[in-house]
Length: 143
Image 1 (tube, rainbow, N blue to C red):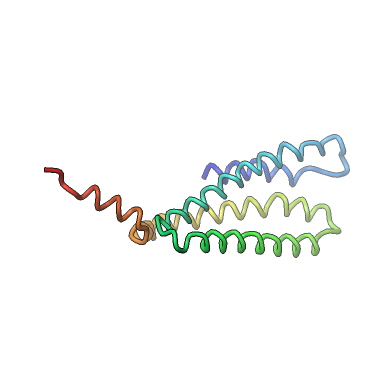
Image 2 (image 1 turned 90 degrees about the horizontal axis):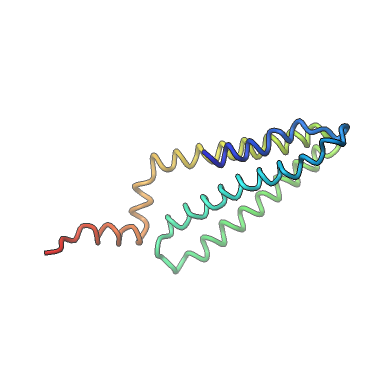
């Protein structure tokens, strides 16, 4: 939830910057940095969730991380290409894209992560060999 607040704090003010007021355009740089911090938090969270699912299974971890990275870059590239190509003539539309898309995506990611944690945390921990090893070592009684 912290990342959603940070992304929103950097993204929403971008909607109100105007190219007709050049004195305020410098604000895009600190806002982009704030937005980047929130997105970096989300990226680290996503990567750690993937590592929880993989556990200590080294045979498929490279494929899973590679597939995640490939899908992430391709899907982001396609969405950005479509949005910018469709709305490049309207500065107001681009301002809303900069402000709303990251905020909505961050909120949706937080909701999906919360739902996943509530409903699937037990299944994920059972799939992970590392967590199975930890639970076995806790169950052993030392005489």
